[in-house]
Every structure is written in C-alpha cells, then in structure tokens.
Length: 69
Image (cartoon, rainbow, N blue to C red):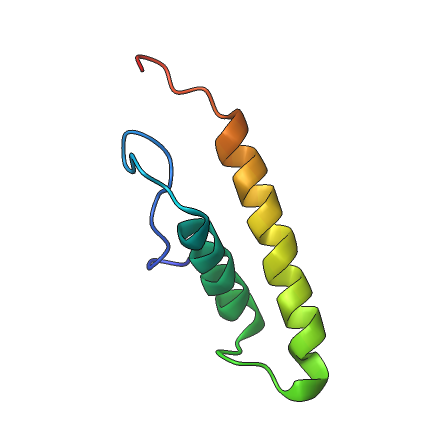
C-alpha cells in the first residue's frame, strides 16, 4: 500500500530513530487520508492520527522478537 514506508525492524533496519517512526506514521496518514498537508479545519485530526500511529508503531517495534538475533 505505502511503498515508500521502509521496514523498521531488524535485520532490515539496525538503527531506527524516533524520526524514522514519525516519518512512517506521517506517510501512512498522508496515504490513507489523501492529504499531503491537511486544511486548517482537519489539521488537529490529522496530527492526532499521526501521533497515535507513531505510538502504536513504537510499541510494536519494541515488542517484536526477532529470532536468531
């Protein structure tokens, strides 16, 4: 779906920063909303979605167990 979102777990990415997670969340919300930058009346909802997806992504990456590592 979002081809420009990169895999953020080992072994595909060794050093994942908070900025990497934020960028992936932003790209996802842009893709599903169809907005690169939302209008002022949608900005709060847009940013809230990015924040929630960023948190969920960080939680997922923090809980994954990669075998053989």
